Every structure is written in C-alpha cells, then in structure tokens.
Length: 215
Image (cartoon, rainbow, N blue to C red; front, side):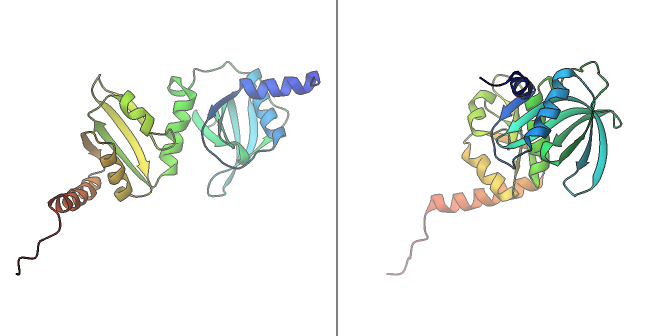
C-alpha cells in the first residue's frame, strides 16, 4: 500500500488529467504533482515559461486541467494577465512556489478541454490548414480523422465541416480523395489547384496508356 501522502499526489494527477493519444518528452514528476495539486485545489499558479521560440516569461494562471497526449503534457489555464485561455507545454513550465491564492473555477473553454487542446495543437502543428464542407455524416468520417490532424463539426445529418492540417497541400489533397466522399473546399483556394492536378492524373490513368497505332 502506498503512503497516504504519495496516494494524495497520485490522485491529484489523475483527477486533473485528460488523456489523449500521442507521444512526446517526459516531464518531471514533481512538476506534474505541483500543477495537478493547483488544478485540484483551485489555486493560482505562477511559473517561468519558455515558448516554442525559446522566449522566457513569467505567467500567472488559474489552472484548469492537464491534458496528456501520450508522453506529452499540456496545461489548460486561464492566463490572468492576458485575460484569456492558454495552453502550455508542461515540460516548458517551472513552477514558482508557493501557489495561491484560491480562485473560483471558470467554465472550461469551448465546453470540452480535450477538444480545445486538440484544436489548438492542430492549428499549431501543421504548416498547411484547410476548411471543407464534407457531404457525409461526421460519424462516418470520424474514424479517419485523428484529433491531432483535424476536427469535425456536424452541420446536419448528411454534411459536416472539416478543419484539417497537413505537411503539404498535395498530401492533403490526396488524403481528401482517399476519403471517397464529395466535398467543397472553403479555404484555402490553392488546394483546388492540387485537386485539379490529381483529377488530370487520374483521368489519364483511367483512359490507359496510349496505344501505338503503327503496324
């Protein structure tokens, strides 16, 4: 049986965490337990933070939940000075102790912490993004769209909106064709050029190789 103090810390991490798929760097367990306790006890958390460009800042937050994406962890918190929700990579956080004071919990961003983090990560992860109207139910496409790649939003029973990212527009065009459903490109218009190129290539392949008419 674990000591009561250790059980208390582990329970705090579990209660303050939303799991999601993926991989990433490991995080100091002491940092995890400090953040988890602040989430659980609704105490403000001050920490030193390095952004993706290496710029340092001190943040004052009202921590809401941690999201685990495989071995990568993110903190969803209300940034007091910026007056908005923010997502922080936990491996870039260095908490300043003690924490406090207590705060009144806010409603989670967009009503769903996992969906919020998925959207934020998808927007930051991919160099190319697209928005489309898919002529198929969202439930039909859901198995093909991972949270790290895109997000589906039902429009009605037969159509949905897809926001998705990729390493290139050519790769994105190929993936959309593979889904085997009709769709309309909302943005970006450059994606249509790649779809036209695929259409020409497929049309040529459907005709077959040119026959030699010489006897």
